[in-house]
Image 1 (spheres, helix red, strand yellow):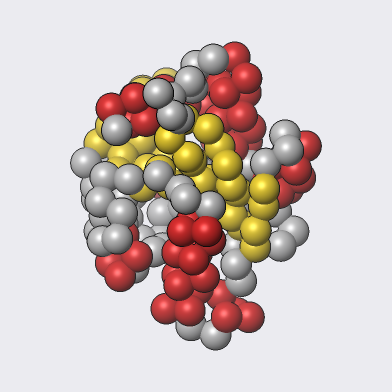
Image 2 (cartoon, rainbow, N blue to C red):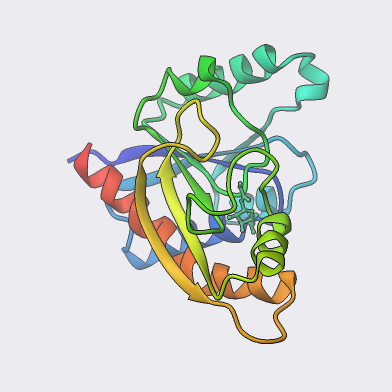
Length: 198
Ligand code: GAR
């Protein structure tokens, strides 16, 4: 059977993208193939990771395109041009409007670095999520992979994994543990699960 064509949307370092690339190499992802990486930041290191893996890249800059609508139209065009079936938000730090998400129901996945519904929604991204978990004083956090709809971090949950918070944790230490123990495992697993069922 043909593999599902996957696009990964990124903004920064791209360690989750790397986990997906590695999962493809090792066979954890076998029902899909990463065909395109789109960044909303021209300097994202994730673009170099994609290039090193011989994956096509594109950049969409909201500032240059002038509006949210033009930004989303550009991404839609790229997805159409590359015949993309499944879209993965992997550290993509821009909220997509209903105009965009409604075009791809149950076709967009996002990884979020907490156990949704804790520490999620608008304003909760990257290190801020871990800062919020530490300042609340929770003893367990984790990561969630969910489908993306019009509500930020509000779509149906696909996979979650819990991670312990330890005495002395800083947001940076906790971010690394959540990535290693949860995000880099559940994101490839969820991508394979979704691709295999399409
Ligand atoms: C990851 O921890 C990801 O879960 C988080 O940003 C980091 C990106 O790292 N995403 C969000 O906070 C989205 N709300 P990466 O670029 O190394 O994958």
